[in-house]
Structure formats: structure tokens, C-alpha cells
Length: 219
Image (tube, rainbow, N blue to C red; front, side):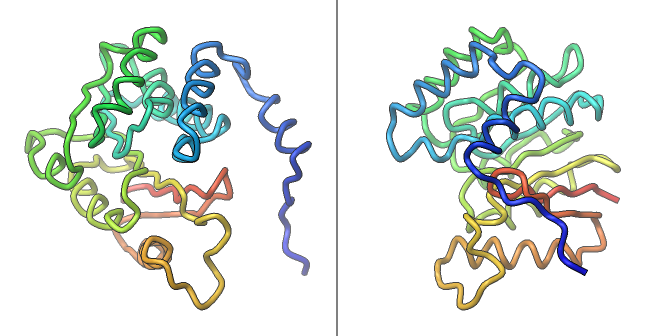
């Protein structure tokens, strides 16, 4: 049987982005414009449809406490924070005061600044120093690719049963699934994808959204 999937053209991708709720959100669009002015760095920003997916998923889960590793200019943080229940809190981790200074301005514009607890520093160190009693409903991982597995092992014990952890860039620009794979980031992502598929602590599926989201439910 022929594999069932649809390859995206630019026109089809534009259609996809238009056919979603709040497709022309002024705050998120202004943030994208400012981030794109950073040049090639802007590729680190998640896509529009990923943002909508995160908001809907966070709200459907009824998440009160969420965590993200890799905040950059704050697009994903806005999307996650908007989905949290009243009084919810997102711990946002990033090493860059410069990039997150942009994020903080747009968090205010989006009205979510009180929902976001920004922690500046190296992610592994920050994760190790979190309140030992803190439990999360959802985690979004989009930091250093070679450290994804370490983030996962530090976050999973803090995730409630049926909580979710999502990893970005898990198709690595379409380079995974082919051999040989030589770059360290791609090799790390490939190893983690395969580890997660065999990990008895989670149920997981790799989704072809943007650059690939590995979607895991804690058992």
C-alpha cells in the first residue's frame, strides 16, 4: 500500500496557516517581524501553526504548570501561556538576556507577562535547581539539540501522569531517516527519537508539524 502523506508546497503551506483560529494575531505577527530582523537566527522561532497547536494542546490538557527549554524571542511562551488555566504558570528557560529582552516586551503586549517565570542560565543547571516539589503538566523542549536527552531525563520525573512533553525539530530539516548522519545535533536527535520509541515510561508519536514534533505522554 502506498504511504499516506501530503507533501507541502508553499501555496499549500500558506493555506494551512490561514485555516486556523486567530491566524492574523497582531502581537504574534509583530513579534515574528521583529524576530526576522535578526537574520538567520530567526529560524529558531517556531512556526505559526506550531504556536496554535501549543495553545490548543495546553488548553485541552487543562495545564496549570508548564515548562519550556529554549525561549528565544518568546513566541512559543506566549502560545503556551495563553493556553494555561487561570492562575497558571510557565517556567521559561533561556541563556540569552538579549533575545529574552525582546520576549518580555511582547509578553506585556500579549498580556501574559504575569504567567511567565523567566529563568536565565544554562538549561541543565536551571533544571537541576528547580523546586524539588514542582510538578508540571506539560513541557516544550526547543533548546540545544545535543542536550535534549538530558533535559528529558531531568523533566520527566517532574511530569505528572498523563502529562505531555513535546520536542521541536525532531525531523531535523528532513535529514533524519537517511544514512550516513554526521552532524552531532542530527545524531543526537536521531538517537533520542529511537530511544523514545522504545521508552516504556512514555507513549510517543513523531508528528510532521513544521520541522517535526515528538509528542510524548507520560504513563
